[in-house]
Image (cartoon, rainbow, N blue to C red):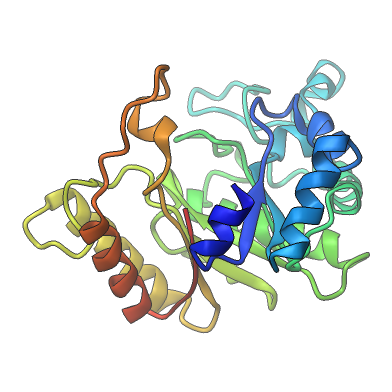
Length: 271
C-alpha cells in the first residue's frame, strides 16, 4: 500500500478504528506493534504523514457513565435520555470528561500533520433535544463539538487544528455557532451519487449536495475547506456487505469532482 500511495503522489495516510469505540485501544497499541513500526517507517521513508480520522464521541464520554448520571447524555426527540450516541452539549460535566479524554487521546494518537479529525458519533440523527439544547440545530451542535475539541487538544498541542464535519445531518451551515481559529471545514458527502459528477446538473442528488457545499463555503469562507470523498470506499459502494463489489466510480467522475472542489477553494482532498 505505501509504495502505491507514494506513486499516486499522495502525502497523507489516515488510520481509524473499525469497531468504535471499542477498537480505539487496539489502534493506540498498533503504533508500537511490529506491524505498526513497519508501517510508520515505510510512510516516513516515502514522505507520507499519518493522521487519525474517526467518530470518537462515545469514547470521549464513555457510555458506562449513563448508569450513574443520565444527564450527561443526549435527550432524544421523544424526551428520553439515552446513551445510544453522542452526549448533551449543554452538560459542562460531560465536557469536563470530554476534555480530559480528548487530551489523552491526542497524546496517545499524535497527528503528524497537526490535524485532528475526531468526530461526533456516526449517526444520521444523534443530536440532543433537551430543553437547553433544543434550539441548537445539528450543525450548531456539531460546531460546538469542534470548538470544544479544539480547546481541549490545544491545551497540550497549541498548533492543533480540528475538523468541523459537514456530514449527514450537518450539511447545512451552522445558524448561531461560529468556528474558532483552528477549526477547518470538512465536507463528507456520503449520500451523494457516484454515477454522476458532483457538479452534474442532471443529477438531482448531487445538485442538492453541491448547493449544500456552496452554502457552507459562503458561510464559512474564512476557514480552510478539506474534502473527504468516498471514491475508493469499497465498503460504502458494497452496502457495507462482503464480498466487496468492484468500485464503480470512473476516473472521469473523480477528475471532474477534483476540479469542482478545487474551484470552490478546497486545500486538501482525501478518499
